[in-house]
Amino acid sequence: MNTSSAVQAALSGLGFGLSLIVVIGAQNTFVLRQGIRREHVPAVVAVCAVSDVVLIAAGVAGLGAVIRSAPTVLVVARYAGAAFLIGYGILAARRALSPGAITGEPSGASVALGATLLTCLGMTWLNPNVYLDTVVLLGSFASTYAGAYRWFLAAGAMLGSILWFTGLGFGARLLGPLFARRTAWRVLDSVIALIMFALGTVLVLQH
Image (cartoon, rainbow, N blue to C red):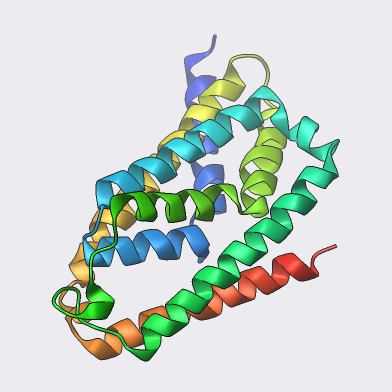
């Protein structure tokens, strides 16, 4: 095995993986909000990172071809994901109407770990775009690499996800002073609500 080719494959996977994940979406906005609140951040980061690792491995192993041959699965996931995102958007809109500081007010009250993790899992596994991007698209890209090199590419993509979610979750606390104000929370939750409504609508209208 050529070492330089393996490194090149890993770097390609890192860049390709980051290009798919560094976007404004449901999962990233959720991680950002948890990071700002400093609430269950290690657990949320771990769920997102491990989920991506599993999906990337599945895509490189060939699950993408199975998904393409069973479009009904994506249709079911599309409507379930749309309902979930719109529902979360409604909750974000309600928070925007009565925002509080990070602590000490009703809208800033802590959410149980179990509920937080279930929401995080929903943001990840009920989003059909995750399967199209991480499993199908990345899996197709990996198939252009021969033998073990595709797994070096997968390792690079996995590393990209781990670095991104870690940086986003733990780095968001730097915005804490800004979000000690009601107005900042109102803006953030309004943006989150709009993103969720938009993503949910797109999923419903997709054919």
